[in-house]
Length: 267
Image (tube, rainbow, N blue to C red; front, side, top):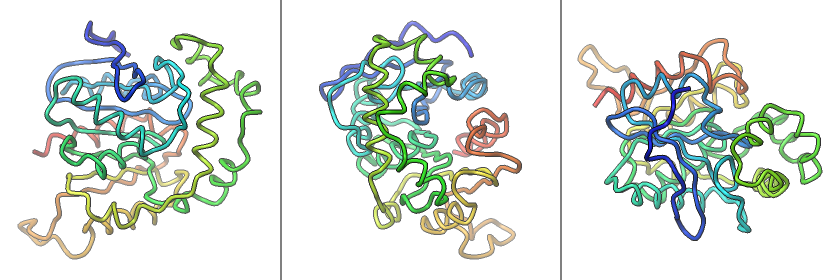
């Protein structure tokens, strides 16, 4: 991954600090990682996306470079954080892209703060908790603070060790995140009202079935009719199902950056 620019740092938003890294130049893209991760979770796709735009990789509440805070972790409050960060950086609007946990935050940002979101990219992101496969929700339900120690054997903790302001705060992150992952939600009606052009991306072997991604696309008005020879039947939204891709590698496969860049360049 490329070296971030000198504008990277900690942004004070809503009483907490968010760590962020800036890569490349051009139209801004806010990039939000998955659970237990940081911007490094996207691997070479950071460079690939930054080749055509300014990528601002944000570490969500208590993740990565963002100091752990004593605040319940909720999609809604983290969405407020992202909107505040966009304004803090002096941007009128930005494209927002999120994966998994970050996708939920990106979705809530578009719902709660439509004025700061230009284009929206949601990777492996359900609009209701039951959109995940049952084994995924069962896994979330089974996790609690007790996994902090065994999770120290994972690559996610190895990355955390390298960048966290206080490595001893790992249990704080684990406790907050595992609590969040158990909370039920259904954002169907709010999602239906999203105004930003949106790209839904999922793998054909993802943690959510392709039919949920299709349902998401249809919820936004896509997939309702033939586009016609002049494309007049198309909406502003897009759907991509990446073949041979799982929830555990969709963030790093080259096809993700290629697909996303094509969508962002449509305007």
